[in-house]
Length: 279
Image (cartoon, rainbow, N blue to C red; front, side, top):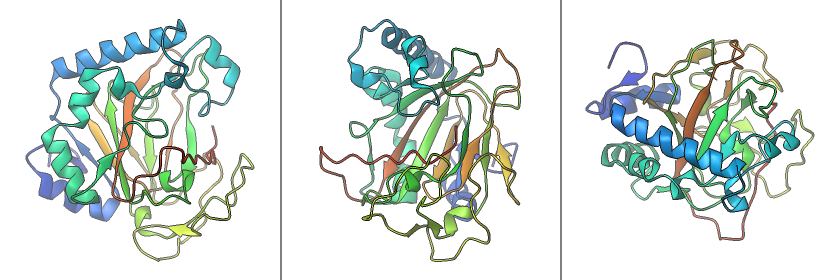
């Protein structure tokens, strides 16, 4: 373990798995070198600028995650399928150590959702007026697709910028991946959950001790998870988590996010995204 709880070097996979199994998240530090992150940043920013300029296929831009879709006309908070545009991103998510970790956490036949749904996504969260994405409320990733058989899953977030209260950070409820969290029948956006949805999702059938808040409220037992540049945060698809808004009006919080899945790959024409989390 490195300098803080939940942070592990690439040579301590056993320690990382031990922590992750208990808490539902962990940080890998030191897997990517400074040059790797520099290249990734340059390639992601170039793709982001190309989306803004209309130089890429529409599938690389996104409005589905935004609080105000019209803002996407002037600024790109997201670049979808960034793995198809950035060799550095592809190299990172296919790094042998990361693959070994994912096979241990999710299963030996796990796969990256690289070309389905949104692919691997570059995210640029900032508090400026041009931004359509600054924060996200409490949710678990599973709740976005409760009808699909892709689960279980572990998400990876490769941090181009380190995080802090100034630019925003991840909030998690440790151990909540072990609860049988209900599908988002109650959600702040009033989105309907399909009849085919599983009623609950979690690593066990244990009932949560309290309901998941609909917004950004403080939760008993929650912790802030901070990352340094180049860190990779791993978190379980069933983990309750949210992201805090930046307090510095000029701050940036950029990262690359995707997931390894242990279930069945969906057919190409299958798409399910329930936008239940507050923005």
